[in-house]
Image (cartoon, rainbow, N blue to C red; front, side, top):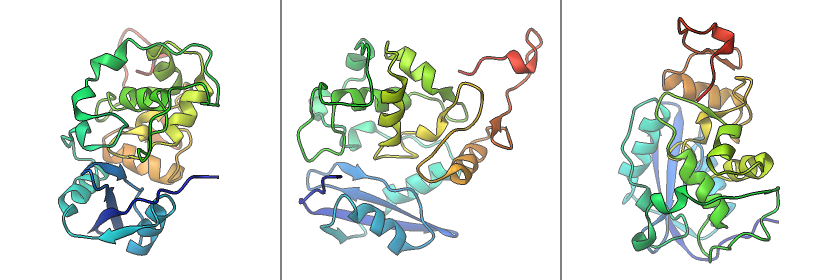
Length: 227
């Protein structure tokens, strides 16, 4: 059962065309939730309320919600990850500190991981490291679950996939850019159709549910590696 947070947060929404976007911000000024867009404001608010039933609507963070919308629609946006509640203080936020961490023989359970104190939506140092690794994927490019695992020096592919699937900040931490090793776009909490749309908005070429890789003279198309 998912534990719901009792602390009140502030939520701002933004509409772009047919879609509504939202961000939830804690009393500490940290973003704790970015739901995937919905066709109604009620839909995105209901998604936030699953984890944060106590919230107040405000216009204070409309610009941030618009930034999420811009990213969804393919714009290359600059976003300071310090604004996200990743379970560490601003003084601790140094991405280089996490690049040398290794995680061996991980599986789907996180009982043995260092726990991050509430009310952060990121529950363990392992989840945080996975999200930080995903945040490095460049706009308009993709990588694989396997490559993320290798970057973290773990063979716990399922654990990595689980952490990515629990991403509380989709679009800004671009879990949509993680695909399967065979080039299939893979699963997405918003559905395959939404994942395909976001990737196409970023200029990624897709045929059906497969990534189309750019041809290089030295390799046949079907032998090109994914990033």
